[in-house]
Image (cartoon, rainbow, N blue to C red; front, side):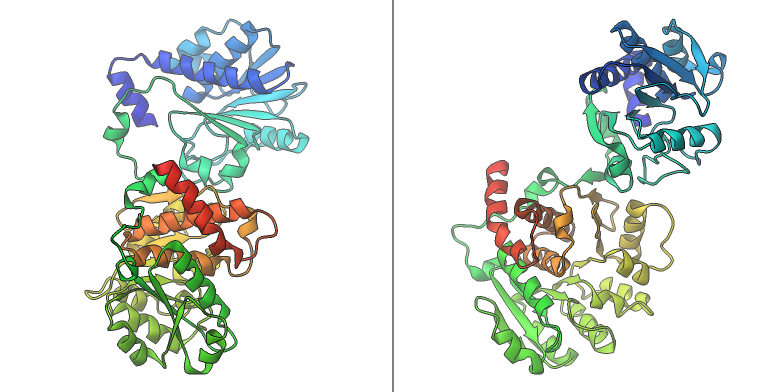
Length: 484
């Protein structure tokens, strides 16, 4: 965002004009949402504070009772922030822990998205008092204390009711806990020059159909089941077969032309009693799985759900990777390598391996990437993708999909109804079904996560994992209408 402002200013637009536009957006958003009353406007020493000065001036001009507080000395302001302060004719009070006393709400312009240090002292104490009193906060750019790159809290952060940001959302708006702390998010244009996005070339996106529309697999009138791919899901033993069937159903509903459950011999009867449109093949160990996948029409494979943790699962994973099939590795397939993750990564990056997607939740991620602890979830997912050579789906309410080439999406449509047993197995199957249809790994993972979230959102409360695949036809219907 700093670079976009700089490029716009270099193109001839005065910085104070951008600041005036930003401050007006804040004032208009506040006036439209908060009842008129005494307001404390909190300004910091940088451009975020400059936006606050302008918002304060406009609100006062519109008849609001505004008290302005500044962190630091007015005389030390520079650049556009100094000009914005010059245009404010009212008193400027020093920002202390009591700055919100007597206010009906707060406009927070202390620190913006570029915060690079821990919030402490009077600012942290003020934040604590405002949050404890549940005083409404309208934040400029991001709530003070929130890291705009990571979504993490730097010491303390306001719990905002409204956040007004400019040009585009920032990662901190999307990744938890940042998303929760921002409240309602308003994104406004402030006059950023056309072409800036092309110059910046961002690699982080909110997950949405526009990101992967070109890769969306539309069925062909001349197509047939084999042209839509043949997905294989490896089942666990007789006491844990349900997870594989959930994944298989997800793959079939996602559009794979054929789906086969590869079952240990002692679980064949149990799986056969539950499967109709999904085929069943017995296999006994890694060599048997290798022979099964020698049929290159079987072009995508999911291993992990219900498979059990241990050497046999490791051997099955390594055998499948050598087949060249596109792979989805989840659950037990990941945890089975927690003591020797390098063996898995070498195999994924091997000459014979096909595109691979890893789908860990936070616990599985920490077991597979024990040294990957620096930065927020977005940075950690990116680092894991580079280390493993796979597309990494770090699951959660803000699921992140990261590719080894640096691209990443943050998902925002997953609701709490997805927190049910087997939901992740269906997600693995949906991604598998897309891979079987030839969708590239990053797009398949991003698309699958979005479809999974949309299916849950459409069903709502009462959802169980078996419902998710059955929601996909209606989700697909709406998506096709949207994409045109």
